[in-house]
Amino acid sequence: MSLSVQAQNRAKFERLLALSGAQITALEIDDMPVFDRISVEKRKVIASLADARAMIDADPSLEALAAQINASENKAQRILAAKIGQIRSEMNDLNQRTKVRAAYASTALLPPRKRMMSTPGAPRFMDQKQ
Image: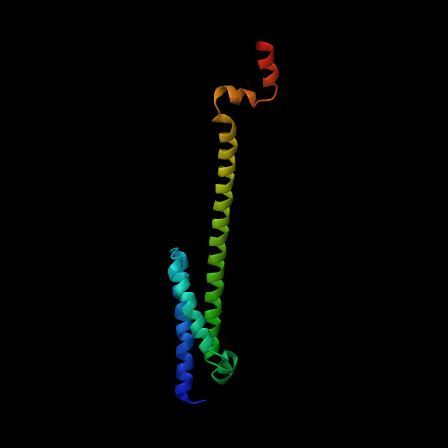
């Protein structure tokens, strides 16, 4: 493999590492549109690395870059998983609040007579009063 091809491959790996770092930064500051744009760019770079294993075999110095990229990807995955867990927790909390509000609204906000009629035993009480 010629030196210029090796330099191009190294540049691609370095670009991928830089994109991984930028992706982590975007996750840490909750900038999801930037995260998505970086993901698209990373896919393009990865597509241009059609046979990365052969490139690494031809230039063993790329092995260290590949390890750094993998570590960066793992960190991004952990951050993303934590954010997804947080969003799910918030959604569950919101759903619980909505259910409580709906249950409360179905009884507490009725007019007084209907509210009393919706309680168990109330119809018998009303019949006795008349």
